Amino acid sequence: MPTSRLEAFSDGVLAIIITIMVLELREPRGSDLAALWDAAGTGILSYLLSFTYVGIYWTNHHHMFQLTDRVTGGVLWANLGLLFCISLFPFTTQWTDETGYARTPVVVYGLNLLAAAIAYFILQTAIIRSQGSRSRLRLAIGRDLKGKLSPVGYIAGCVAALLSGAGHGPDRPGIWIAIGCYVAVACVWVIPDRRIETIIAAPAPAPAAPAAPLSDAPGTDVPPDAPTTPGIDTPT
Image 1 (cartoon, rainbow, N blue to C red):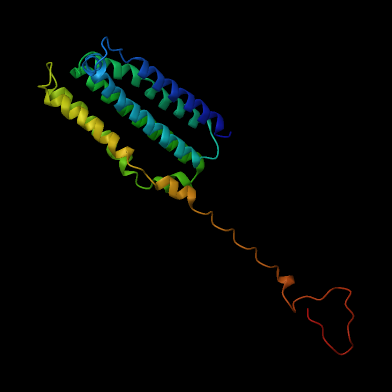
Image 2: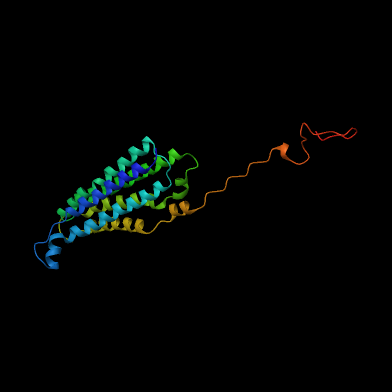
């Protein structure tokens, strides 16, 4: 099965997710910047972070399927799992903002990010297995240090929020550390990654020239109807 339908469906779902998130922003009651900040100040920041994550997943999803030639049933279900996790971003983002970055919503938001990262890894693994031992995607991702370190950042943020994120207001170091971890992971992925682009741009290896049959070599064969001269041996 070609990848075009899967990519088109995924693009549509991600576009809807972004639209839902922006519709959750509250309209200011006044006409100045103070009214805008009171109504949607933290909401805009939360939306910006979640929008960045959706963009990160969209770009990496696009690059990954540039190295995918066919889609199996396992790849389809793994892709649906990834879309499910990302579709929760509007809910967890809104909950975090509405509660003033309370401890539990911040932890749940981090778990949502962790679940999406795991789902992306499962999709990546399903594609590599479908391609076999000579997978171009496996060659492109290499050791995948960013993919392995990202869950560590999400878990660190969740633990920080759990340990010292109780209370209300700005005097909650655990919440600031948690948000810092989530932002740091996003920044790591926003930096352009040339691994897959390099593999895509690399010219395909030229096929080896077929070996000439032995009968085509000079002096190794004589047409069956060739005349013979008495006393002269012909090559056999």
